[in-house]
Image (tube, rainbow, N blue to C red):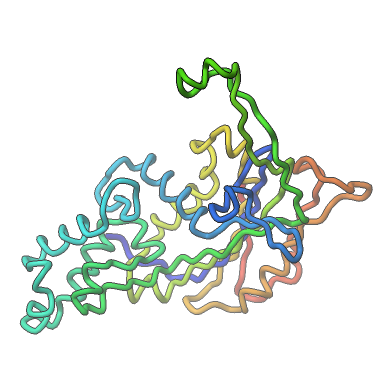
Length: 296
């Protein structure tokens, strides 16, 4: 594998939704997630990481070193057992195996990080190893994302729809259509913030420059192959990356995030497109040792 990255990064992702549901809440009838106190829309970090994983899986299609650990239809312990087979231990006898090999944790962790891109990037909790009392069961990834929040409050709408196809023959004798509903956000611009730790990349997962370049590409394109009627029109509008010239960083992350502003243009009261906003980065206030790159 390539060498781990040597620089710390922070990044801001601006993405929007038009007439769609960016992230439904299953506890609220799949209504778009909203902060009930402020009305700001929310998109979970788990949702965003799923889009990134899906893009990487499509782009690499099982290429060595770029498999996905958290994926639909594949039990986690199936992948865990691969690592056990690689080092030649029985998954049910990990505690005994650890007594015989003090480096077993590192061998299992390295196998998983070398083979699975999302473990190398986001980390993972590997249940088989946790049950075996191994320290490698929990891998803390160098890339972390927070919840995305809308720049302005949103007002989700419930839209009633009709369907001419009837579910059963008995129902067809009584009615000609069926009613349904879906939730949409007419328009919302969302902002997510993330962190890349070179220190964790070096000490734990081996996250490399090639992995980082793939991460930026995945973020920029995470909605391009994920369109659906429910999500409407979603797009990443801009990715703003702050790069430090050292491993531990040159400035606090929150001060860099504060340099990025997305504000409504004068006269706009109800935003309905990205053009209704002005996005700026106050690069004159960048701390020494930090550079800014805008993508998208």
